[in-house]
Length: 289
View 1 (cartoon, rainbow, N blue to C red):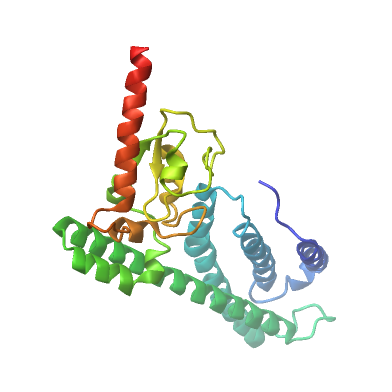
View 2: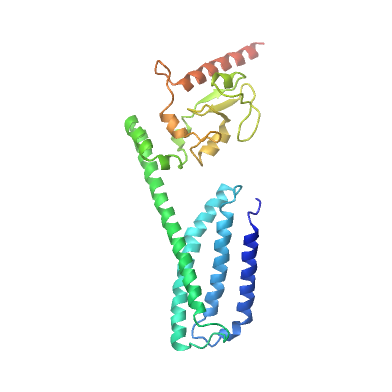
């Protein structure tokens, strides 16, 4: 993975390196304080660097999916609680110092500087709180959508299913396909004329892995847009996103709202069935030869 750091990040790091040097050079002068406020300062400096590192790495376009999930878990379940603890402990220690040893900080430091730093940390914790609550609400909505969708799908109530997809278009476009959806993806045998049959520009390779299709390969044609992919490639993609990689069409919606022919048949299924039959005939002829 390429490091997604910019010049501003290096400046940020240099500033904190200087702050670390300043803290350690005056460490002994905090020894007379009633509470170890210098430890609070050190931990908050480390926390700020970790927070900035998270914001920089999480948006990297080539970050592996597993690494991204791990970073999100660490952020919400480790870094965020740690920030709340730091702010709370810093306030307690500073109040104790102001009461028992108000003159213990280095003489060249203004008394209010630590309070300002605690305020900045509290503001940062508030931002993290908003991010965590927003993520938690989204997770709850995702779980409820999946449970409701699976329940309606198992009941076979197409009207209720269509209503659900229309009501929750935002979730519908962000939640990956379920295994029951992946099993319904139409599979066919690739032939030279498949692109023309599906009214596509000539597509001779998988847009994900760029592997050339060979006559006789089992491929998947997405409903609605009809784009062709290798089965493993597109299923791996749809386990992360319900949108077609090429045209961003919603595959889940198209599975339940396929374009219809004049006699009510699914146009894509007609094409796929005809192509599958043609492919089987070609393979049989090759065996006979």
